[in-house]
Amino acid sequence: MKTMSDQTTPISSTEITEAIAELEAYRERLLNETLIAAQRAKLPKSQTLAQLEPELAKIDSVLEALRHQQANN
Image (cartoon, rainbow, N blue to C red; front, side):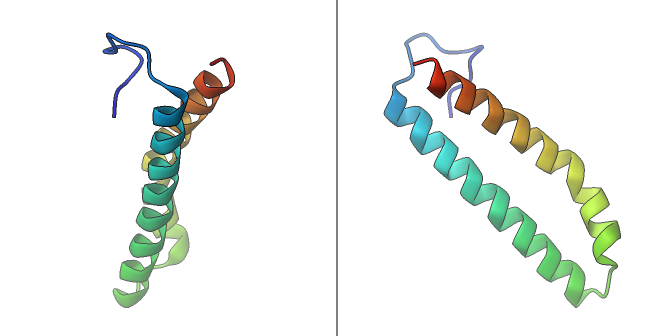
């Protein structure tokens, strides 16, 4: 995925839409698979979510930036 800092050509609206969809799917899969693994390991859900939160925050930040960029295209 291209980032705003390394782009040399404009990113099309279609590419942004695809990146958003892929990132949303990744976020959902990461959350679900991590919670399933934690449940199997008998780890508390709250502890698992606390450890996962920084990664989810990064993903949410990138999603927000992409949506902002999409709105301005």
